[in-house]
Length: 128
Image (cartoon, rainbow, N blue to C red; front, side):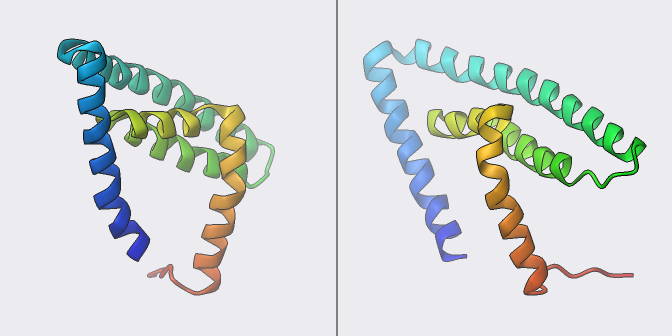
């Protein structure tokens, strides 16, 4: 939890520094246009990848298999979409990394291991 709070301080500071640097290098309006463009592209890419994940989930369920890979893909697509909608260049790079299927496969084992540790330590609570 401490690292999460630290990231809430460090990431915005880095983003502001990158905004200032970008504004000096390419101009204020070009920086604003780039931020808006990455947001629009992020929405398009997240929608496209999200629909692909839904189709993969349906296919897995149709064949009677548990869609565990599709669920991890859905988590990555959701987080990547949120990061792309967040204004900033650093968050955009991480968001695209999570949205592309080739790079998403690098992150999925880490997310699976993290979720497994949450279940093993009973951090998740299920109410019936």
